[in-house]
Length: 308
Length: 231
Image 1 (cartoon, rainbow over the protein chains, first blue to last red):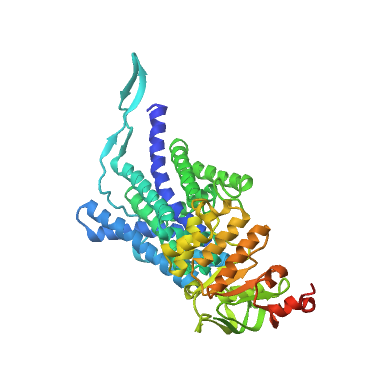
Image 2: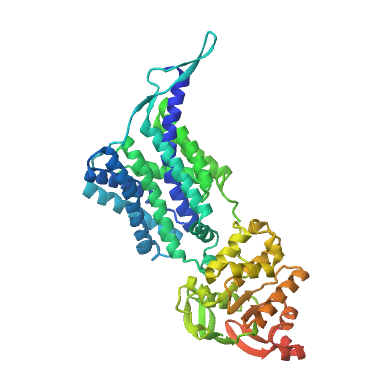
C-alpha cells in the first residue's frame, strides 16, 4: 500500500482511540475540575465498564446487538452507581483532602482490580459488536486526465469503528450541553469555581460531588463499553487509559473540558499513527515527553486557567 | 431575629471566637468593629455554617440553624455578602443572580425586584462577572445576596476598594433593607461609614465581644472609639 492510504488508515485507527480516550479523559477532567480530586482509580472504572459489558452481554444473550445495547445502558450506570457510593462512603469521610484522596483511590484501584480478578478471572474476553460490516475506503491518485478514485487493497475499516467515533462525538456534545445549558451544570460549575460560596448559596456540594464522581466514572465506563468489541475485556486493561487520560488532562489543562477533548484528539491520533508506522511504545514515550515539555513550559496546560 | 449564644468557633484546633453572644433585631443594623484577626469574618462564617461551632448556637427567627448543613442556611433567610465579593467569576451576571434565586427558592418576581435596584446589572446580564468593574462586582454580590429574600443580611467589608459614589449606593441599599425589617450584621473598617447608618456597634477583640454600644453614643463621644479602637 502507498504511503497516503496507509496514513489515512492509521489516522482512522487513531481517531477511534481518540474518541474513546476523549470520553475517558473528560470523565477524569470533570472529577478533577469540580472536586479537585485526582482519581487514580479512574482506569479501573474503565476496566469495570468493559468487564460489566461482557457480563451483561453474555447474560442477555440473543442477537449481539441486543446484548451490546443493554450493556451500553447498564454498565455505565452500574459503574456510576459504584463510584457515587465510593464517593459517599470514602472520599466524603476524608473530606476530599487532596493527598488522602490520592491514597484512597490507589487503594480503590487495587480493590477493584483484585475483586475483578477473583470473580471474572484473568482471561481476556470479547464482546461481539452489534454490527461489523467491512467498509472498503477509497483513495485518489493522479492519472492521465487528472485525479482518479480507486480502492486500494487493504484500505478498509468497519462500520462499528465509525459508529464508535460518532457515538463519542454525540456523548461529548451531551456533556457540553449538560455543563453549559442545564441547571445542574450551572451548579457544578459554581461548585468548581468556589466551593465555600456554593455552600453559602444553597448548593448541596456533597451531592454535587457524588454526582460528578459518578458521572466521571460513568463516562470512562461508557468509553470502555464502546471499545470492548474491538479490544476485549481484561482485569488489567485500566492502566493504559489511566496513563493516557492523565497525559491528556495535563496537556489540555487541568479541569478544562475543551482542552481535554482537543488534547485527546491530538494524543489519540498521534498514538494511532505512531503505533502503526513505528511502535506503540514509541507513541507512549513521545506522549510522556510532550507532558514533560508542557509541565516545564506551560504548567497550566494548553487551555488551563492561569493560576491566581 | 439573629441571635448568637455563646458561640465558639475556629479553624481546625485553632479557636478564634470565644463564647460570643449577640443579637440583631428586625430592622436593625448592628456593626461589628475590631482589628484584623479579631474574628469578624469568622463570626460571619460561623453564622453561615461554613465553620463548625465548637460551642454555642445560632438562631434565626427563633429557629436554631447551627446544626444545619451549610447549604441549608440560606434557605432559612440568611443572605451573605462575603469579604472580597467571592462571585462565581466565570459565570455571567444572570447566572450569579440565578444561583442566589435558587438559594432562596425565589423566582422571576424577585429577579425583577433586584434588577430594579441595580439597573446597571440589568444591562450586563450576559457579561461574565470577572469582566465587571469593582463597583459592579459589589453590586452583583449584593444583588445575589438579596435574591435569597433575606430576613438576616450579613455584610463583610462591602465598601472595600470602592469609589465614593458606589459606597453611597451600597449604603442606600443597606438602609433600604433595614427599612424593610431585615436584620443587618455589618462588618466594616470605615468607621465614618458605619456610624452614619448603624444602630448599635459591637467591639470584637481577640474573639470576645468586649462591649456593645448604641451608635448614637459613639457619634456623640469620639473618645469612646479611641478607647476601643485607638482611632
